[in-house]
Image (cartoon, rainbow over all chains, first blue to last red; front, side, top):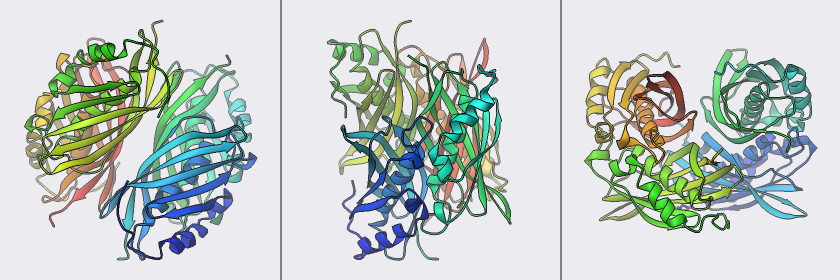
Length: 146
Length: 146
Length: 146
Length: 146
């Protein structure tokens, strides 16, 4: 985990504003639930609208929420004028995502001058408790105005 | 690419039936456009409902469509009673997904007794032509009834 | 991390015996430095014999040590007659590997009936201290005698 | 595959010179066997010195050769003063590497201003013929003198 100090003191509202522009997050009914320096949590319901063929949450739903959590974790550390873009991201699925909702906790592993490494852990929550259902890691890049 | 002969002569209708049960594909307005032995193509519109914060298609939309294409490519080769599950899948993003719609062409690289490797190429189509926007590769597993 | 109890009470000597058969580990002058249930540490010198073109440790050296650490971490939990095989493994490089030696700490994230997920963190050690230089995650499979 | 024209007319000798500085490639007895614009082939023997515990080629040997092939494929397209560095790279293993030698064919998928995507296919060659044993894909970065 990074000990980088955020370059943008307004990172909380800027991350929140950016998140609200992601149509994909609205389609998935996802909500930002925590924004700290270097870590962001997003929650989304598990439901028929985001299922795969056997009724579990589609891995693409997990990946989408996890990618946004990992990317925004990186954005918390960037300058106000910067943007974040995912270069590559891998998911390892640990267990079928069963329950009421998932949370994805993104965190920054390396905050570089141009390239960053970030990760996300995905949990499913339901009546039977909480289960770690997927882990993601990938590369993001910092884009500055030209 | 595999030269495996499908174990299930009805693979086209079975893949189509399974696809229609994926709520996530309906939410993304995706359609199966080609189902052949070892390769499956899925198309989906690019729009505000699946955007990221800068207006491009969210990488999670690409990943979701590509994962279904890669997984169903594997399912075309399996026995009628088998199911497919993604174990892990990585995406490398090549270019922002701009245009009207994307297509994901999934294919089987290795069809093993239990573990398979499959890939998907994602293209964005628009007035300016077609662009290769992402490439995915991952592992799927064959699940048989106990 | 898993809380699985090892199936093989002799896992320490069996992992050590298996490690001694890896010609690749001898070529890299690697040594097993810790074998616990669910976690294994391997150390190897950084030197001209395993360099890349700029004098840093070749990423392939890191990957090789990390793959063995992650795989053997999984093997610590398996039955005495089982073997472990890597299905896929990804490395994210965080910093050039400069110093005297590296250590790779492998750990099990998911211990499944057939498929496991394991990870490794790679550190470089030198006069200037210890640096986290790479992180790996991948899938291994348990092979039982037929 | 890229249709980029190499920026450095002397790319063949520069790649060859760089390769000869990789101590890791010498340790693995690897040889550059083909250097073209956007694609590089490297061969290495399979032997006891690079085995894993069951006598197959260690996946780390395959990864190392494949990483160098993918990286040098990218370097063929760069300017004379640039260097290439692997950011992340994943291998999917398709079959045990049995035989006399392996070849890794690296190729460029995307040649960007700073970030490139490249891939490698690994083949094992022996008395029984040639087998596709692994496929790799990853991100490399172009480093220019400051």
